[in-house]
Image: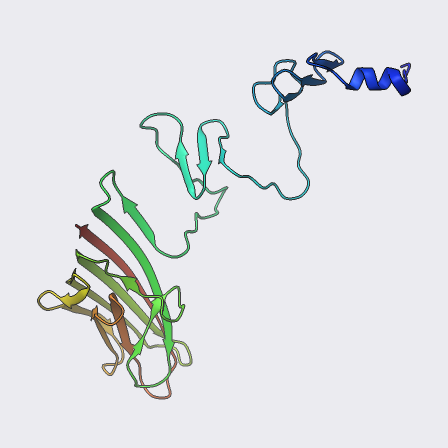
Length: 239
């Protein structure tokens, strides 16, 4: 293939388009000077950069604005479908799992009705009542938002890890509300001790008015290491 070279005034006249488009090999690279667009693999770019074909990027890709790959749009921290009423499906490859960190929230069109799910965990090695937190992160509590009522269900599992043969499970259910910044229990908490190998273990849950939150406390035994996990589901009505 012959290679042609231009330089000097000829090169300048070719690069100074003055409103005229420039094409390389028809559509290999197309400069739409009129609309300030560049086309790769197309002679009719519809956006600032229009690539027709597969693209390989080595390194990071930073976006400012929306990203719409086919049937999806990613804008900020929102991923949505482009087809009306279409489902959004997350599918892991093979035996992999879809992993969601922190809380999960189901919010319908009306933001006043919300369902959330949380996972809290922690460790005890004394008989002192100990609060467990979302993701095991200290002070990360389940919020009870202003002017709301929360109905919650909790499943708690405990296992002793320094000596085998000690386990426990509990189920709790209750209601808390927040009225103008004051968080309180509504009635009593229902607690079911499903099973336990050590009767000295204990769990407690309720309103934390200081932090406008729901607390979960667990109590182990002295000299024994217990790991605890709590799966919480809340049903909230918000003014």
